[in-house]
Image (cartoon, rainbow, N blue to C red):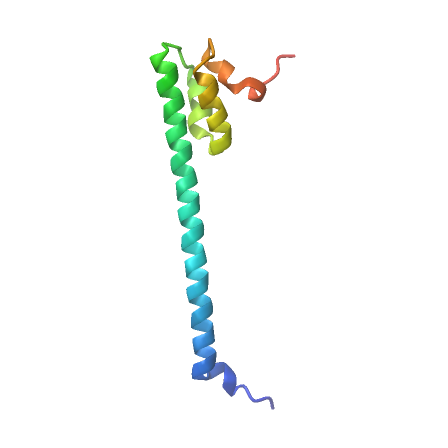
Amino acid sequence: MADLSFYVSPLSEEIREEGRAEGRAEGRAEGRAEGRAAGRAEGRAENILIVLGARRIDVARATREKITTCRDPERLRGWLLRSAVVATAEEIFGEDAPSEQ
């Protein structure tokens, strides 16, 4: 029969606890990064709508929903930059807009 005493020893418990602590730290770091990205996305979506509103450009419900549900900070950044120069809200999507066929 194999000696399994190591698996219940204080040393093995210490090793497992170190692993658990490391996993918790990594999980917290990932959660913070995801939270920051979500916050940036929400902020940029709001800023797009603010810019369009300040320019008195009407925003259709579907367009507003597309903006507010997007979670890609870089795509939102592009839309925000375009929102300063477009004539209609739908133009902010540029190449992202569905093609008319």
